[in-house]
Length: 87
Image 1 (cartoon, one colour):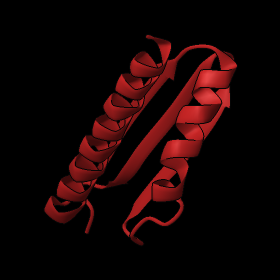
Image 2: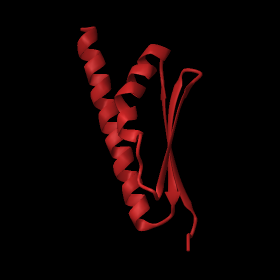
Image 3: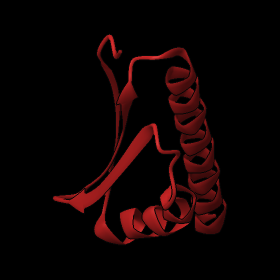
Image 4: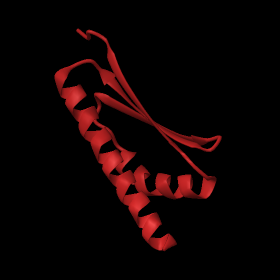
């Protein structure tokens, strides 16, 4: 029995070309999610939105946390790469 849901939303903003590149970098990792977790992605209006959701259970919370950590780490590497190219 579920005690509720967890939903984590990450929003990246920027120009369309940069957001598309970020999406292309992150999307392959987000294609398949475990049965107990849902990942939604959208690029629109200068924003790239990722939403992670699932039932409020320990395993799901840990999995979503790990996924969010991974996305933030990859996004950080993406930004560092952009900055090094701009130099």
